[in-house]
Length: 611
Image 1 (spheres, rainbow, N blue to C red):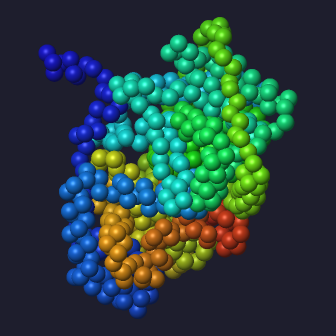
Image 2 (image 1 turned 90 degrees about the vertical axis):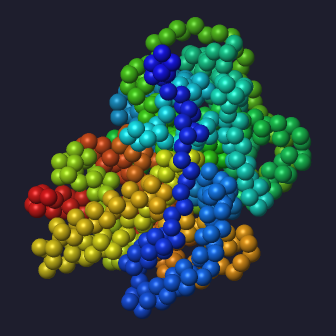
Image 3 (image 1 turned 120 degrees about the vertical axis):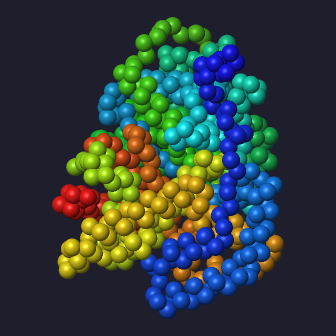
């Protein structure tokens, strides 16, 4: 009977957390042999020989000692990587995170019920906010179904970081403050923060324990908008979050030292559910060209978003939407999951509120006004200047390739993601006449608190295939070379998802050496280590955002690199690319047009050869 009962009860969001397996540590032998394979495409015979010797010495000597210590660490922690990754990839970074690390993207609602339209944006914002609060409530009550890969449950811990979460800057290292609690765990903050024209307001999203209705939320947003339109612009303190991290930490300490009330305001923003950014721009976009919205989401007005907040919901004044999120507390798939939910809810209701129009008399939003002095004003203007310079340097394009999509690729019995990845490799090779070191995100959420592993798509097989495509005399070998590249990519991706990649393992060995005050092992000083992308030096930083309607973008990892993010639909592939304008070698629109031709050529190859 009990068994029957448990089968009929819906699964709870976090119910599998404690039964997830620990993150494995691969064998030293396998990681080093994969590493050698990965650097091969970037090495001359002479360099490769030297690197092989470096790896041999590492494996026989210091590498073995470090590996033993890593295995010890893995015995005491269910995820040996978790804290290290958070610190190294995010919290210890000192570069401004808002442009360099945050991810942002356009909402897809303009493709169906909400095309750009004047005078609609507050009403739409109140509806989308209501749906977002329903999602928060699903998490609070643990009714959001746990995600699975086939039948294997995936780690859901990152979903705790979507609401009521904020990064706080430190002089040497930032921290993450998470105020979210499920109903079983206790009370959770329920207030929202609204930013508009450099000013900051807050109101409670609940009234007598019930989520405000869209008409009630509209009343609150209209109040903020009317006040901001009829009064002078605010101080724009939010822009400080876009600063270099140590500078922002010191500015923040100073802000708190002026008046303890400033600390209360910071706490209010940090603990809020999320931030609603009321923007005045109209970044006209279409289903085929999302460039303006993507650029605005990523590089828009810094005085109306809190760069350290895990979710800023950006409302554009033409009734379109975007988001900007701190990357430290969670990976993009969390936001993608919520935005896909929102998109489906809107479609189902045709973007309308069909409930009651009655409005309870909830108290109006309260403005949060910082006490300022000359130093803070100076800090704000410095931050603005620095942000605008960097933002103007970031090139972002987001186009739909509409000739074909997942359906056609699958008819050829090829993996859609690998198809896109190989087209990207070829596009880069054509444009730059050399292979590009490349990172593709692999998800390791099968494991306890797993996040990501690096999959390196620029394999020797991919390069060999690119060479056949560039050489008119190799026509007959192209098909076989392409299939080998596909097969290699698929195997590496499957291994990475099983925690058998090598990048995080090498990072662990490097960090143990560092923590013990040992000299940096020679392996990490080798020029090929960096040239092949190691230490965060990938020229192509890429990610499949999924098979849904939701897309986003991140800045390139290196100055001479590209960010390349895409979503795959049945009939199209939508790609957002980023590059730095000040680097004259790179150009996102050129990469897109090269990529489009490569997709066509690959399909042609797959069709004529009838794989």
